[in-house]
Length: 288
Image (cartoon, rainbow, N blue to C red):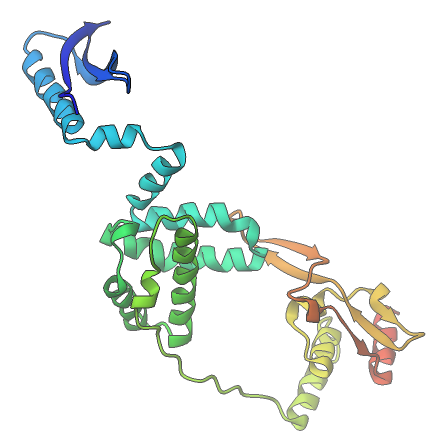
């Protein structure tokens, strides 16, 4: 490769490096690069130093390589050099349309509360992350009082983030595969017996939430599902309750907004349940 040369030039009160580059046919072409330096008395020595730095990069092949990369390759290189905490924010913004509003809000909360502050202090680029840094992060979460189950959610989110980077050929492997997945203690649920349920319903006798609690007790539906039941979903002729609608809290824009959606969590979530006679009577009382 022909050695790259250059010179200083002054234009509009600023110093520029004029670099002599060559086409594949050997033709010389000049490239002007601003040095961010005013052309005033005593500044030429600094300008020469900056010119020499640029020439050294060209002659080592570093700048030639960057300039001959495609835009997609340049973007991959840029992202690979990003600090992890910045990449996580970019990923969430890019990926948000693939997520349900509640999932997006959950990821946003995990990132803002723990992930971003931790990796901002660490200041490590995405390409340099290994299982060691991730294990240290999981230990930090557990030491800070989070359960193993919650730490697993952070691990799963990071796995998804790095999987996306692999898909875009930014990373050759997923560093989460080098880390130890946090262990969670098996959840043991507490539940009300029949006597406690009767006591609960008696306590809610004149409460507007009584019918909501009753539907939850008898059908075991999710909070979003029971809140989304419309009168039109009550089919007295077929004696069915159709679950086709849900109510969620959307926190994706920094404000909590109550939203109704006709998209359920999964296909199996769209279902019809038998209309129990006692529930039918209670619904009639509620409507009156």
